Length: 77
Image (tube, rainbow, N blue to C red; front, side):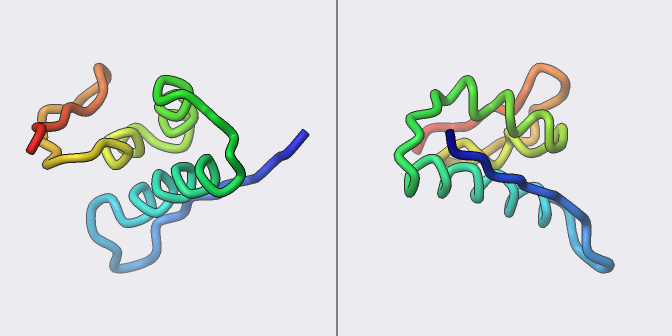
């Protein structure tokens, strides 16, 4: 069994989504590098546990600002 711990913090002076973007991309990177085969739905759930805006950064394309408790939505290019 493989485990990783992702801690998210917001550095002083950081803008919107800095730590959340890093956390989301870390999840994607670990999933790919370790060949974990975590489904997009599972990744979304893990990202949600790190912060309400983390799932916003998992999506490809041009993300919109239409997000709330329902999740983030992306516009396909």
